[in-house]
Length: 612
Image (cartoon, rainbow, N blue to C red; front, side, top):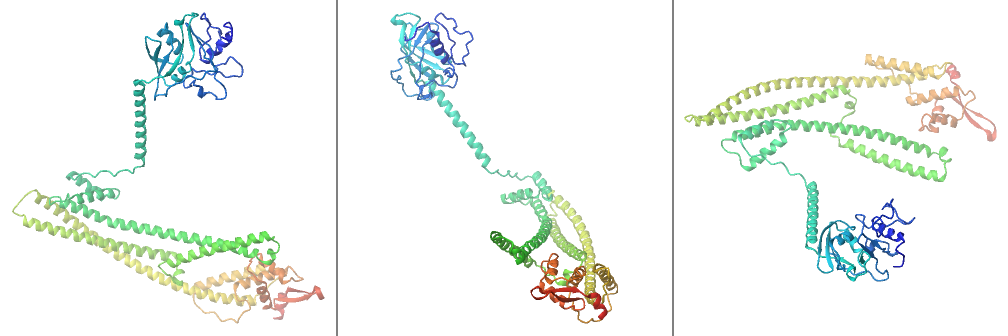
């Protein structure tokens, strides 16, 4: 020993590392307030090899720091560490699931109680098999306790303070092969494999598509229930699948042929319902197409506005104030907007080409009420015709069935059995159904006649409306001619151009009302006017108001800059040509001398009315 036995710090450090309370040679506790979780030296965290799940093999520690083994004191023995300069003891390969260790080099006077005292600190011991010689086999409850037991390999053990050779020895701890350990390890591996297979099966079942429900076997009870299910619209798909399976299995025979025939007939009755659903869905598709077309036209209009913004920005008045980079971006954006606009325009034109019904100009101007009433009348008439055809087909089927039953009844008259009774009952039921179908057919014919008469009335109303539209067109043309003449003869007063515009609008409204009421009386032809359209008349009024508040006149560029705020499509040449065509209203004057010569337009309507 390199340190005295009276120094308790080394013993306490070694026992603290093994998780045991520090105990002296006499058995008393050296530190009454001992806490195994705290280290004896400040700044160094002690290693507790007794903690579950933590091995004390040298490989688990840092490779740079050497493992320092201390003296271990027990109640009846003392363990001295080996020389640190010696190589570590050799061990065999670790068997799978090893829980048993071989301990050799025990003292001859060692007992089982001594083995439990030394190795019981490593973990729970299940069994100890001690030999008469100086070795034994120890089986632990957990696998990780084997590593703790291997930490004691190489220690020299001495019983008490005796120096006898039989009371000392050198421990050699190594892995041991045991059938019980191998069996438990194999059982654990098989359990893990079963769990893995179970998880894989669950994953495969989740990914596997669900299997269809089984088809019930044919019986009279199932047949009667299936007949009711086929008539139900909600249960029809499932019921018709069962009927198809029965037919493919060959369940039809002479006795149940009538039941199968009635079920097939009920299946045929769903054709009318499916046709109606199809027409309803087609109508919804058409409505969706109309909504898409209107939305696309709105989007196209907004694209047109964006393109017009870029065109206005490309003019010289605004273009000169942008930088070179801004012009490049504006040009690129304008090209992109034009391409998208053209693409949407082509798509809208393609939708219009695909429309089957081509409407003329007169049909486009018809009132929506007459068009809706006409379409509804045509669709109702077509639905009544289809229902009439289906009822006729059912009536023919009932007649054929009645004839077959009559023939079978005539053949089997001498034989009276249960089949005859069922045939007679079916015959009576079919006769009642036939009478009901005939009454329903008569009602449908009467309704069809009424719908046809309503359709004829709607066509007559449509013709009358088209005539009224033509008369209104003629009245509007005459009204336009009269407005032109009134604009030539109108006398502007001091209250400004706004009151004159209100008067002309009131005159226009009164003329429209008179034209719509009378619908006749051609107007007289007026001489050609210098103002060719309502837009030019509106320009004349706006320019007159503008020049009236500018008594000294204004240049053509100043007038156009004011008008372009209202409409960017107005050109200077167009405004100048309009002013030159009205010499009695506007006149051009030259002001200035030499380089300051300027042409100005003045409003001379008050003087022009006197001269004319």
